[in-house]
Image (cartoon, rainbow, N blue to C red):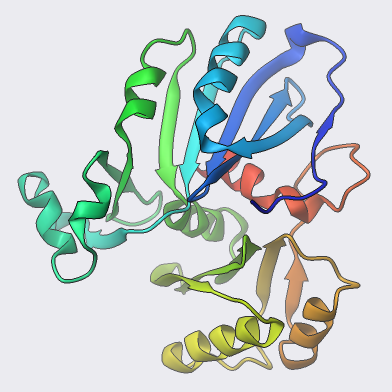
Length: 262
């Protein structure tokens, strides 16, 4: 299920809890609660079957101002805004993804902050129906949109994220979105291979590119040390996450993406 040993609960005053971030993975979810000082004070994870109960509990226990839900799942398509026609939503996935797999999901459309680009994706219909029953407003989005928005926020071109044996890469150039994809990785060499594959296709020099990285990786790991030897411009994304947790803060990059860019 991923996200091992990253949970904590530092809530001292329930009245100070104002925001919820939920990140959806194919078979699990990761959530965080933020206080009025934008500090991450509680983190938990579970399988998707527990999500409805968690949301009901949070609705009863806290007076939230907003909840954000970010999907990391396939399928997704990016379309220039002027070419998007809502009535043909499913047709954009024709030949890319078998739509029988999203039969019980609702179509969702995100829009980039800095460009007229739409992300088309699907979310669970029962979850979306459930959100309308709570006291706090919900925003939803896809991780590819959030990573593109984060690139704009911090003015960096290459954003990457590692979790659940998956590498996510988003690339922009001179403020314009170029690429997003996610890759399944089962060995540490797989991560390097997909970085190199993406950079080769984008004509990016691996030895010169600044690469922002967050997720389930730390600087003492064999994976990080291997990546750094080939990608010397790699930088861990942990400075923006405010928390007094003893765990490396980059572990919570997805929650920060959800909070700041959905």
